[in-house]
Structure formats: structure tokens, C-alpha cells
Amino acid sequence: MPIDLVELLRTRHGENYALHEKHLNHQLGRVLKTIGFDRFYVRGEGCYLYDAEGERYLDFLSGFGVYALGRAHPRVKAALHDAIDLDLPNMVQMDCALLPGLLAEQLVARCPEEINRVFFTNSGAEAIESAIKFARQATQRPRILFAEHAFHGLTTGALALNGGAEFREGFGQLLPGCESVPFGDIAALRQELAKGDVAAFIAEPIQGKGVYEATPQYWKQAQALCRKHQTLLVMDEVQTGLGRTGKFFCFEHWDLSPDIITVAKALSGGFIPLGAVLTTDRIFTSVYSSLEKALKHSSTFGRNQLAMVAGLATLAAFDDERIVERARVNGLAFEVALAPLVERYEMFHAVRGKGLMIGLEFGEPESRALRRRYHALERLRPAIFSQMLVVPLFHRHRILTQVAADNVNIIKLLPPLICGQAEIDYFVNALDDVLSDAHSGTGLVFEFGRTMVKGATRRTGRARPDAPFLPRGQETPANGTGDGASHGADAAAAVVAVAP
Ligand SMILES: Cc1ncc(COP(=O)(O)O)c(C=O)c1O
Image (cartoon, rainbow, N blue to C red; front, side, top):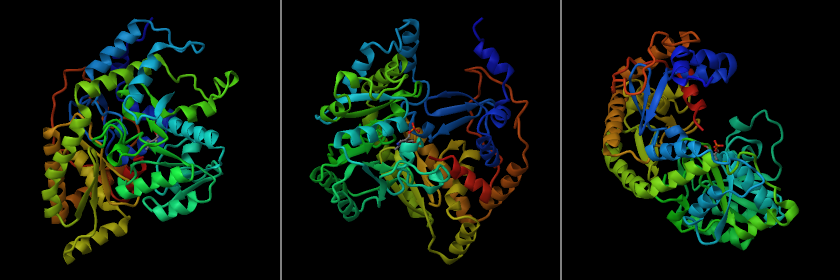
């Protein structure tokens, strides 16, 4: 008998956190309860999530950048329904299916001319692992350079390129030969490349952790130096790629021509995990150099038909709906809408990033009274201020955002690329409200402390056992004014803990 999914969701509704506590990562549930983010989401559509109580949430996290097209994109869904109904011969393995070829064709058509080969993966980290292998094989060199603060995933190879000690700690020796250079420091890069033993410089065009940017000159010089020293330039576009920054690839902002490009996240359409390594004939041929080596690098689920359909439908939707151009225009609209807040609030220092990869930077205020209050708060835990904003943005305004990295007062926004002026205005008004509270130094701080106590004392298991499961269409959209919820220093740590 087939499972009755609706019935299953109805009868087991509310056990989410108890099951995670029992069988999955129990700390995640604890984190979410502590900060009061433990909602029972039942549906996602476009820029919004809906919970079991019918509340609507503006999702400016987009699954860490997966939902460029928003949730439940109708044409990606339709294509996947078709793919299932066609009983496609999936993962035959000893086969060269059509769909991977078609998706590869679509991807290379969007790349610089020299890039004409594609290796499909199941995640961003796997794409990075592949890039490391390809670079070492092609150059026969041992070392990989990466940038400080980098994030390239959490498998052991990708972890060896991770700039955060908190992620690496306790896993023993990682891949040897991986060394960091300060991001944007051309002299440091030059010094390392001159040693002549570097296979690849792997970097995010804009760093996800903190939304840090390097100058256009840096990128031009970095590429020239890589060429000079025969080091491959690998651009990790897992988060920045597919229009996120207002160009299909972020490196297009500086007219770069990398040797290897990694993508994932948005290519999946938000449905089927999918990543890809895009590279040159020469590099590919160094790995697949003979008949015996035809499967030298491969993965069981790579090239699977559902992922290929998701990728093809996603790229078609990108073209039809001019998604890249919309991201660029809406990125500018965000800048315009946020500018008055930067003027108004001393603690709001800058808006960073490109397109719809946005970093909101907060810091020390100028006036003495505010500065005292700010430092009192920061003594609780460094960079708590931005964490203190993320929580009421969620509770009062039902907006999902994240702190960009540990120990920095930066909020990161990754809105779906389909968002428009309505979402921008809603967010900016909400931020205005929360910042004005922070500046008045009364309500928000009080709310933070009060909700921390609530969160800390909440038991495990169902947070809202009586909330009904509402099938699609029966929820009442609401922007809601929450009652605040859980926070403080521990809660703040928790917000950071879930942000990659
Ligand atoms: C730039 C970058 N590279 C790689 C990864 C790893 O991707 P995944 O989580 O799919 O393994 C991420 C994930 O956030 C990322 O942002």
C-alpha cells in the first residue's frame, strides 16, 4: 500500500522536535527552541513559508541560497511531475543519458568560452571536493590556497579550505597542503603562488561568511598571477552563482575567466540536490585520460534524471522570468530603500554585497549614551547586537534572516531572487521598527531578556501540541505581531550556530 502522505503528516503533526531530539541532531532543536524559531512549517510558496497556525513568514534565508526561484516554482514542479510519470530510465550507470548532456549544454552556454566540460555532483561540498581532485590531477601539484574566512562546505576536503576554526576543530588532520591567505591581499597571494607548487587558488567571489568583498583590481591581479604561476583559479559560485549577485556568475562583475567553476544550491530549483563542476577540456582530460579511467571520478547519484530535470527547468525559468536582471534591479532597490536607515541609525554602518546577496553591517554608535549601552550589550557576548536584531525580526515581523558569521555584527540577507518591492518595503519597515527600538534602548532589550528566559525553560517535545495541521490553502496569511520570544547570550550563540 502506498503511504498516505497527507494522513501521515496529519497524524504525526507536532512530533517534529521530539523526533529530532530522539533520532537526529538534537542540538539543532535545542538551538531553535532557545531562540524561539521552533515553528511547525507546513508549506512554502514563492518568498513565503507558512506554519501550522497559518502564520506567514518572509523567507530571506532562502534555504541558504537554494530558493532563488522561490519555493514550489510551478514550472519546475510540473517538469518533475512529468519526469516521474515518464518512468525515465534513471541511473542505469552503464549509459550516457540525454538529460545530463542537455543540462551540461545549457550550463556551458552560460560560461566563458574555454569552459566546456561538466561534472555533476549532489552538493556544493562535493563540487569542491571534485575541484580539488581535478586541480591536483591537472597540475600534479600538492598545494591548495584558500582565503581566510572562506566557507566551501563541510566534507573533509572542503573543510580543509574552511576559514573557521569552529568548524575544523576535533576532526584531526585534514587534507595536507591546504593553506589560507588573507582575502583581498594580493601581496600574500603573490608570495604563495611564487613558490610554484600551488595547484589551485579556490575562492568565493564574495565571501558568504560576512559578505566580504575584494576589489576588482585584486581579482584581475589574482587571475593574472594564477596564470603566470600556472595555478588554476577556482571560483566557488555555490552561493553567488545563478544570478544571486545580479550576474549569472559573480566573477562576471570583474570579467574573470576562471579555470574551474563550482555551482550547486539554486541549480536544484529547490527540489533535487544538484551541483556541478564546470571546467576546461584540458583539466577534464587529465582526469579521464584513458578508457581505464572512465570512472576515475564519479558518484552513484551524479547525473540522476530528476536532478537533471530540476536543473533544466530551473535554467529555463531563469531565462523566461529574467531572474538575473531582476536580482540586479532589486538589489539596487534594496540599496535605495536601506540608505535612509543607514543615515538615521548610528549603529547601522553600511550595506554591503551585490545584487541580492546583502550584508547589513552594524557597529559602535557615535553618541556617548548609546555607545555605553552598546558596549554593555557587547560585553555579554561579542557581536550580540546583530543577533539581537535577527530574533525580533523573526518574532515581531515573521522575517527569517541570519547573522552572517560568528563574532561579526553583520546580518546577511539572501532573499529569493523573485522578490519584489513589496518584500523589500516590508523588510525595510521591519528593520526600521527593530532598530528604532534598539536606539530607544528600552523595549527590545527587555524583550530579548524576557524571551531568553522563556526559551531556556521551554521543555523538549512539542512546543505547540494543539496547533492543527492545515492542508494547503486553508491557512490565513498573517503578518502577525509576535509576543517576542527567547534570547540572550546563549540564544545569540545559537543564532550564529546555525548560520553557514
Ligand atoms: C560558497 C559555498 N561553497 C560550498 C558550500 C557547500 O555546499 P553544500 O552545503 O551544498 O555542501 C556552500 C554552502 O553554504 C557555500 O556557501
